Length: 166
Image 1 (tube, rainbow, N blue to C red):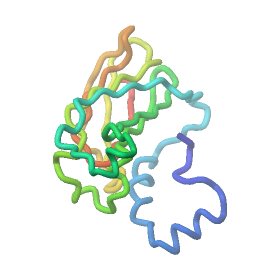
Image 2 (image 1 turned 90 degrees about the vertical axis):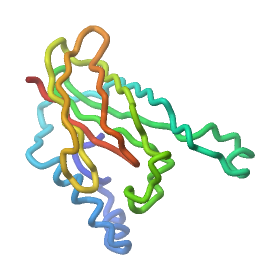
Image 3 (image 1 turned 60 degrees about the vertical axis):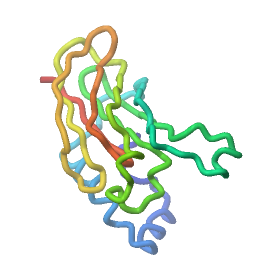
Image 4 (image 1 turned 30 degrees about the vertical axis):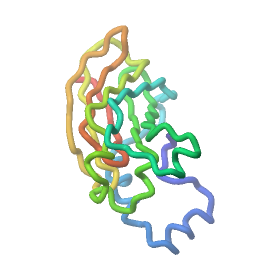
């Protein structure tokens, strides 16, 4: 994760303009509003995600031939021991232009995310819809020696989050 929402290369912005992708930046702008990462000493944190999978996933013949095992759910996180941010995504679903069109059977349900590197204490977690730029859930959790264990809401493509001390 970097402090900006996109790489700084000048040609990158031309693609956003050409394909009219501005709507996808609005959620990230809202997520980053009021955040100042300077001097926070954020480091990459180890993150693990477990989900019961997507039981209705039925591979096509082509997917079977490629040896695909089904969708993979990824977690990326950064923090400084007392504050942090994370990003969860189901890459296979991200090719769909509108998350609301992804069938329930392909969405991520009942996931458990563990973020390592937080100091013991009580934390408030906000879960964000990255396209709408809105909080879609909150949770209060305690960090102990086994990390910060989160139960995110169901999501179709991706979900961002903020962790703050109570």
